Image 1 (cartoon, rainbow, N blue to C red):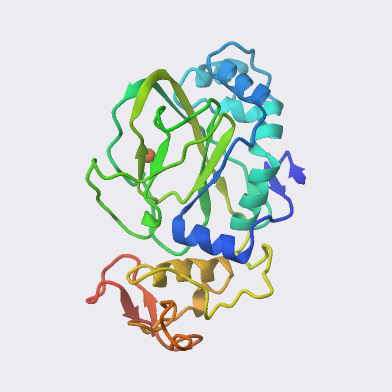
Image 2 (cartoon, rainbow, N blue to C red):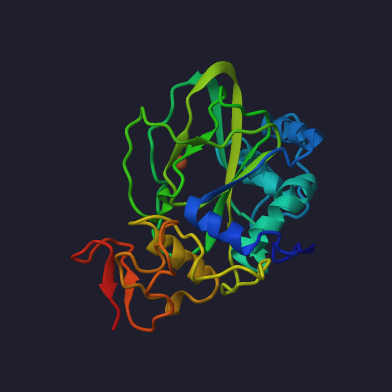
Length: 306
Ligand SMILES: [Fe+2]
């Protein structure tokens, strides 16, 4: 692990494989359960409850200790990002950073802003929503990361996501469920910022704290995660109709080949099924269409590329 404290960036060995990167492109989320030690989880809760004195590693330009005290008492207690124990065990957690390095390339930028979602349970579920300022597109310039400092089982209303919903606007009735990103204390989730999500319903009394922030790409994308010798771009599973062309586009963008990506639609690559007797047509073409992420084309999913 190399950590540049001045630039607030890190580099380390990637830990995800081709298949795992593609799975993230399809699902839009990844859950890392119980990866932070209990003592640090308790310290996080104490810090957020104002029971620990501030001890920032550095004082950011233009800010004073009084400013940091004021910030701690808001819903955006970003001063926690300056504590050495938080940096070492949570921001630079080795399981988390290996995954982030795989998704965001070298020199990953650390967060500068924290959202603290604190709810007294029980509570009804939030409405399904895409977060503000999301952009639907093949690029992955940052990811959203959240941390649960306390056990967060289904009964305490963990974050609930709709797998694969990060490629376009979706509405969903409140009674329809998604996947619960639950886990023991010290669990950290990574998701695409555009994914449809909500705070799940909680059914037991308790305090649910969640800290949420973004990690940032600072280098151009390249296929520099763990390469699988037998990974085949032609026969890999990219998803079903209406979605495979987008997930594959995102995977190609992450490989640094987003500009080369072309599709011809229908049953052609990147779509495929287990029942076909040969590889899909349409792979590796120089001419074709680029998926229309904004849905502005007449066929709603692709437009001709000059
Ligand atoms: Fe949200």
